Structures are given as C-alpha cells and as structure tokens.
Length: 308
Image 1 (cartoon, rainbow, N blue to C red):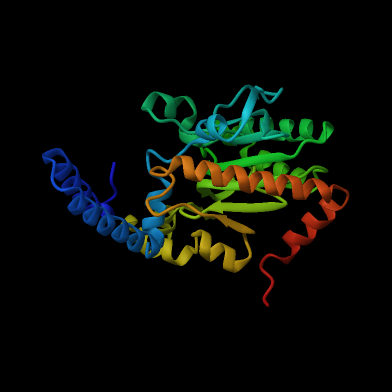
Image 2: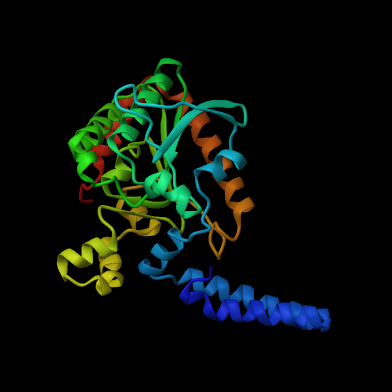
C-alpha cells in the first residue's frame, strides 16, 4: 500500500502502466520512468522523521522470516525459555551466513491478522527475552557469533508480562549481553522500540537500515505524554532523533545499511544482498578480535553520550 507522501510517485506509476498497455512509444515511457525515478529519489532523500517512521512500519517491509529465507541458510529454530513457555514474539536458532555458522535471533511480526496475533505484533513477553538469552549463552558455549534482527514497537506491557518479570528479563539481557564472550551484531531492520529493542540490541556493532527507526518511545507515546495529543506525533518524531542519520551522528549506532529510494519493501533483493554482505564482513572482522571482545564492548558503551 502506498504511503501518503508517495502520492505523486504512484500517479506516475499509473500513467506509465496505462501508456505501456496502450502500446505508446517506448521513448515516452522511458522518459516518464526517468521522471518517476528522479521524483522518488528526491522524495526519499528529504523524508521527515515522521515519514521515515511510516516507511519503517510499512506492511510489506521485510520481516525476520524474509531474512532467514534470503540471507541465511540451514536455519534450525530452537524453542522455549526453559522456564515458562515459547514466546513467538522472538524467534531464534542456528543458521549459516555464507560460510559462517551463527546464532540468529530476532523479533517476529506477521503479515496477516492471524499471524500478528500469534506473535503478539512483535511485542515479546519476558519468556521471549529469556529464550533469547538462553540461545546467546548457547552461542557462547559453541563460540558462535550472535546476530540480532530488531523490529518491534516495544516489549509487551500487559499485566501477565509484568507479573512474569518483564523489566527483570530485559535488564538481565542487558547485563548478560554486556559480558557475553562471543561477538554480537545487532541490526534494526524496521522499528527499534524502547526496552523491547534493547533486550536483544546490545551489540559490538549496532547497525540500522537507512529507513528504519530506533527510539526510547514511539512518537505517538511521546506526543501523548508531552502534549496529550497524538496528532503531535510528527513533532515528537522530529525531537526524538530516531532516524539512522541522527543516531549515527550521536554515536548511538556504528553504521547504516543503505536502502534504495522506495525502501526495502520495494527493493527486497538489493537490500537482502546489502544486509548479507555487511553482516558477513562484520562477523569475519569481529571473530579476529574475539580475545578482547568484552573489553572493547564495555569501552564502546561507556563512550556513548559523552560530549566531544
């Protein structure tokens, strides 16, 4: 489904389709296609933070299952936290990235209403974070790099989740990931929302897709607290500095994986190839420095927020 700010681009798409159907001269169609591509590039180069949020939430944006199918191979899913149950908001297991064996963990969303209900719209319960930590410890035992794909509005805030220790589960993950003796790479592929994202987001390398967002709170939540008005969400998005460019400038993330104009949902193959190449390069680089991995990780996080 097209986004509101893409209206002019969609109109050109419709014009091109009609001309091609009528058999209009290829030269005219090519000229319109060039005009359309230029407009798309200009539009995506000047996205506001709120528009970037809309792209990050697009219903067709690649999910973890798409990355499993297109970036990794030999994925073997592992279930359960050995305490309460198997939360579907986070999935993980052994996988192969080209020639590298890894532990893959990530938030799971669905395409249909039924799928989203099954995985709670990507909002994990404490069982999901405990499962993730169990898999990270398993990766540490077998000296496997951990790759975390972050895409969640936030951790589930329901009464049952709180009763089972949501805050404790996330806090424990932060503590344990800080000293995990194996490389961790975290990539925000869509939404990186609050503690729900941080629960699997403490990495030696933290990356974002260029049209993803990462924030302590959603723009809607921020607007409802500060102005008691959800319509102030665009202003909140601007203030939160939640885009990849802003966070790279602030030193919160280490790099950006580029998406072509139009976003990952329109250029899946190209984005999947970029993600694979980036992850592979980082895994190989981090494995060389495994002996100092914890020390360097602690130094990295100690520097965040320091004034230059």
